[in-house]
Length: 259
Ligand code: SAH
Image (cartoon, rainbow, N blue to C red; front, side, top):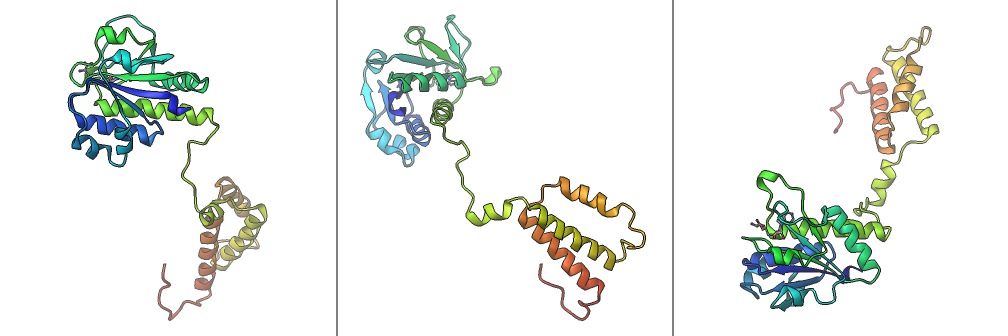
């Protein structure tokens, strides 16, 4: 689906920005770059800024006019940093990502068009677009670097694509042991902890078994609220074991345990 979405850069002056845009695209799973009359391309600056995304630069299509770049497109979205000079249907980046994915999913071809570093897109070019997209930056300093603007839109396309594919956005997986130790304790583990805790509190004479008052039920409320994990429970149990040993004088004459 993402192959149906092309990024069009119009009249780019700095080849570094073309490289930066290629990198941003590849990070987000986009691969089709179209360059309209770039000032300086191919260029080693573009390759340097692309980092590992020079395959996108190698495959970039170079054309002379925006018209050629848009051949076959069903949906064209043009980006603009400035106030709207012409009243036009406007999307925010999130809506742009969703529309691009919807169109691409139906087999349509989509173009995201970006303008010149010094002057953006002309009115004529903007009028070739079905929608305008403005990244809601600070109005007193609204213009993003070209590659940064590509990054924002490519990211929104990816988020919309992940949602359409029912894929999670939290993709970094925990190792199996970390998953295990972050699981919450079970009710029976909590019960043995309370028994251990009570024993330690008696040993250190904080709790008088003859006059227990409500201490244990209050502590149960406290720990019951705190969503203790298995790992945290191990730490608490370790503290209790050492507390009891200390109360019994079993540590006397020993070196301090390594923590
Ligand atoms: N001086 C130009 C700024 C161009 S920045 C102007 O006044 O228009 C280069 C390109 O980055 C813009 O043409 C647009 O494609 C994109 N861009 C930068 N900031 C943007 C923003 N806030 N919203 C949408 N696109 C932006």
